[in-house]
Length: 243
Image (cartoon, rainbow, N blue to C red; front, top):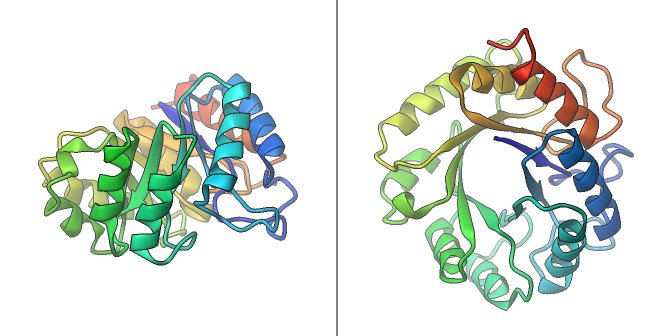
């Protein structure tokens, strides 16, 4: 499975390729799915370009994307969108349009409460386990671990293309010691995005690509948009040169 991560915490200051409005997100999702993406991850944003968990922001983004594609659509619940875990839970309870799934970063305070709020509403949980954080240990101790939709093995801080795959392997080894029984999606960030995606392909794991994770193609040239990144990832993992 290849997921497209349409925008992340990036803004127009990072690149003109970052989709921000519901309409732009919908069109980016449509093109990415046409290029081969099977799942969508999005950060709904305010008109000022800030990530938000408000139902007035999440609802229009989800509605617009679903009018454009017929694949699962998920959102972030990152602490940068709302630092207070209790407030995050309140906002999830107030959503009028529900995503198919939402990512929960297990190194953040209140992860179990946020995940429980999502599960109570029938929303799948992507358990974000960042390398180099206490996330894996906290996830191992969580009674919700067997109930998540999937585990996101995330190599965020190691953006060195030479070392990111080794960091990814170490994270996967740590996750293998946790009896969660859930599928794993492996991805990297910036300079580590493409090497880690290749590793995911070699290991037969799901992965993701998109403007959130990288602004460049595998050859280092600037990406025009999410669909170009997805097409490149599909060629790398499914083409004749794939492992």
